[in-house]
Length: 97
Image 1 (cartoon, rainbow, N blue to C red):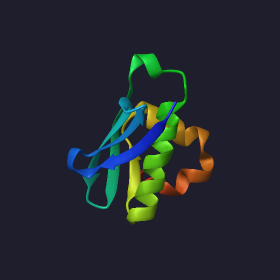
Image 2: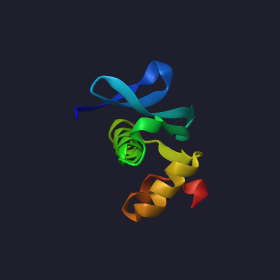
Image 3: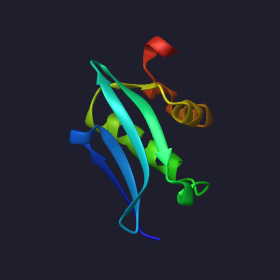
């Protein structure tokens, strides 16, 4: 299984492909000094393999490395991801903490 993680800024999304096919997508919106992660979706055939978590981690790392923005976890899955990764709480928008 070959995984490829990419950022598609024109589509405002992060994508995880497996063997060339889209397995998981994370949509976002830029809100001035923050980025709202609005929806995470994993195709049913790929669910349960941890791909959405890999994609959220990639997206969080990308936001941290490429901007000074913080993250608003508008999607329930992203919120739970941050609950499971307390070491990444500094990436949350301070208005939420």
